[in-house]
Image 1 (spheres, helix red, strand yellow):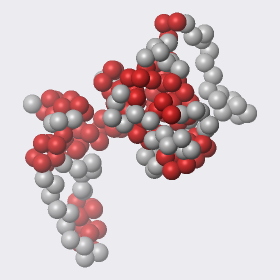
Image 2 (cartoon, helix red, strand yellow; image 1 turned 120 degrees about the vertical axis):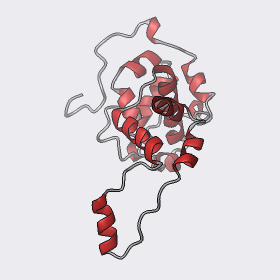
Image 3 (tube, rainbow, N blue to C red; image 1 turned 90 degrees about the horizontal axis):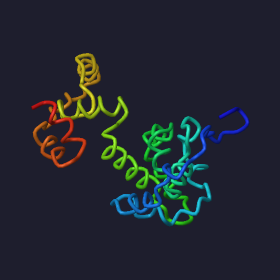
Image 4 (cartoon, rainbow, N blue to C red; image 1 turned 60 degrees about the vertical axis):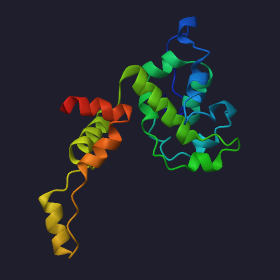
Length: 182
């Protein structure tokens, strides 16, 4: 990528082994991926996306890779990191003229990445482990509790960790992190 061209560049030629014509159907078969096949690559999702300016790949590029069967390049390139940057704001869904649920399709691709590679970004891993341990995504510090007291706010209630774990035990990511505790 350079300052004039914001399209990521592939430096290697693609081979037949890089292509999986079934990939789009695998994503479409997932609960969140069902609308991917309606995408005709207008780019509205990418022009609406607040994350496009910091992501290496825009949502339309990630979806294009899936539609073209570029599973291996998607899973082995910087595109894999861009998938995890989705802010789930839903702007892309509201503006898509084809009704593609872009945020949901990206969730399906994330799920595919996790199931295939057992790989998630470090930050998400830390948050997931914290949820399993504490029942919430962040630990409430003594400083925060003191600030709440100073503002006459009630203490943050204890999280129902067992209920959270019960829910998580039925999810792939929850199973992975709960196994570590046992």
